[in-house]
Image 1 (spheres, rainbow, N blue to C red):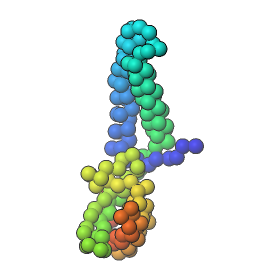
Image 2 (cartoon, rainbow, N blue to C red):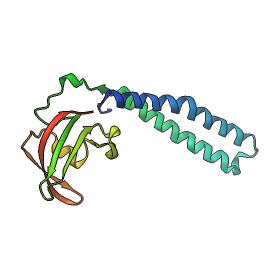
Image 3 (spheres, one colour):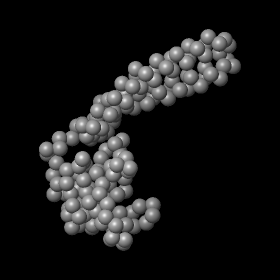
Image 4 (cartoon, rainbow, N blue to C red):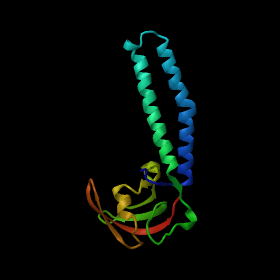
Length: 159
């Protein structure tokens, strides 16, 4: 059974665009590579043919996973988000209690996470630790670097 993935409108559009690209551009390219390698003769000792077939298998697996993700995706209705506590699509401002550094993150689905743009996965240690917290609460989060304490300073609708 596939799990439901909650996506932003932007994340859903990107997933759809990526899938179209793989099906309309990448799939025909690999088919062409296989045909060219096949035309070179004996397939039993043809490394190009083997490599192209392997690439085709990986591409089809990727397409299948993306189709499954898309089939189980749910668009998040931002108008119904509750900012009284941290949840998916919330932008949360936190303070590391050890060094007083302040950070702002948006909690998103795993496949939309991008630390460079401040988007962290709800499945990450920090994301999991912040879920359900309210302004003023402190989240004790176990990370590979050890136990960190983050105070929730503000919760807003992300973007």
